[in-house]
Amino acid sequence: MARVTVEDCIEQVPNRFDLVLLSAHRARNISAGSELKIDRDNDKNPVVALREIADQEIKPADMEESLISSLQRVIPLEDAEDEAERAALEADGDVTVNEEEMLKALQTDRDSGPDNRF
Image (cartoon, rainbow, N blue to C red; front, side, top):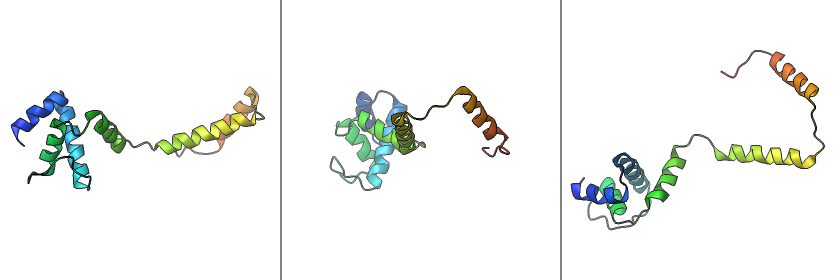
């Protein structure tokens, strides 16, 4: 990588660690077929990614969101499904559980067998 390119990028992304993460993520996207924002000029993907960052063709904030979502292991759809179920139960309004019923349900759940969660 050209030192000039890295020095130009430091103005856009002051933290060198963040710069490495973001440029590597962009280089992987380019390898996967993402369209280039600048001319390649016979450069390899990491150099093209750095030049895009230096020329402000790619916004670091947008790349951070993309990087974070690519590294997440929690699927957001599960949370949405839980929210929908909770909203449906609250909308019914007929579901009321008193403390006694809750304790019985928890006791039954605990006594139902061995704990296979681990």
